[in-house]
Length: 177
Image (tube, rainbow, N blue to C red; front, side, top):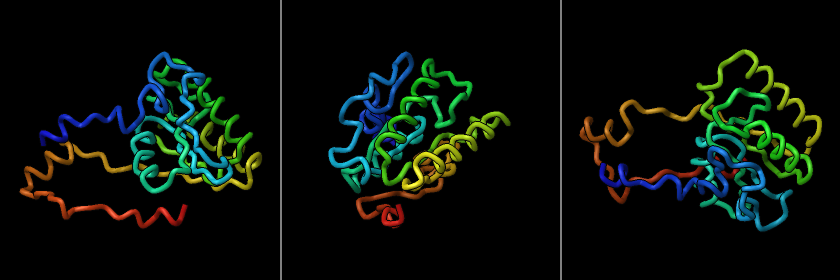
């Protein structure tokens, strides 16, 4: 529990560099957010802070992972967001995708927070635009990830389940991207 409470998520999410925070604009994306090799071989992670959290695990599997994420800014052009420059950021990312044509565009967000009918329409429009303008890119929409109440460590503690050094997750789906 102590390790969970002290976990610095900002480091793995690359906050302020690849995970833009309030008042940051697209120009604030750091060069390290883009892959070192050809963009056409990259997996682009585009979304909010939930996507940023997943990008870390993907980067452990491959150096060809680009991360362009922003807190409270789902990959839905025109969405009403608490993020000041969300529309500008999404426009920038879409332009990057259209110019560089990554192998995979992975879209992820805390979808449960974006349920307005207009959000769904705009998201559908984005998918259609990606299909039309970057047909060589595989577009993957990652659904909701588990949301634990209480937190997962608290749940495990209450259930008497202890994790040790032998517990691990296996990235079986990486090859499918």
